[in-house]
Image (cartoon, rainbow, N blue to C red; front, side, top):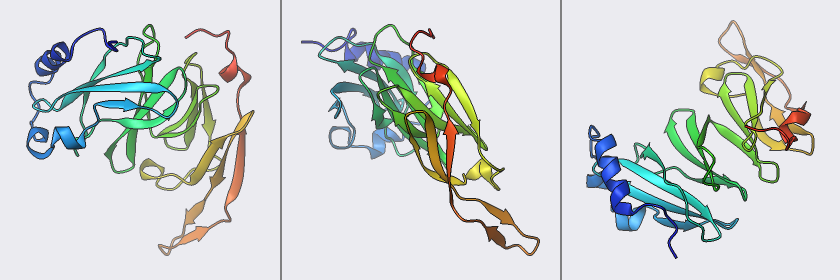
Length: 220
């Protein structure tokens, strides 16, 4: 049983055309047979197929479920460490792959299992609700965004205070979803004139979710 609509040869040829300017460092440092994933069965019953061209440092990935054929997504670029985006979250409808991109930088590539949906992207993914396909991410300083991957509806949630140095860090941790909100631990500090910091007690913060985030009648 085939899982793809096009062959690995076609994908490799496309990679060569689209990424001809790459540095090709990965072909020298990566032992592909031992270090790169090719076929991955996920814990929730999805399947990932990776297709690489190390000379161009690019790859395609296909997400499928139940042995059905899939659609190649990409081309994507391997990280500086010559690795693809790897599984972070998943549901029966979506697979969320993440990859590092620098200091306080990691990105999400959202692959739909359905062939008629488009790839989505988000910066700094934080948490995922698989039952409702809700992804929380931190793209802009002091703003947590929650997106329904199925409907594309988004809600932006402002943090309680401006976080010092938010462009290179964040003042919260342990974010998770509840039935009607997100909760996280707020860790706030204030710079003092003498160069030291005033730290405040950690605070459990709750932010209600819009009802529209879980409204299945909405269309993307």
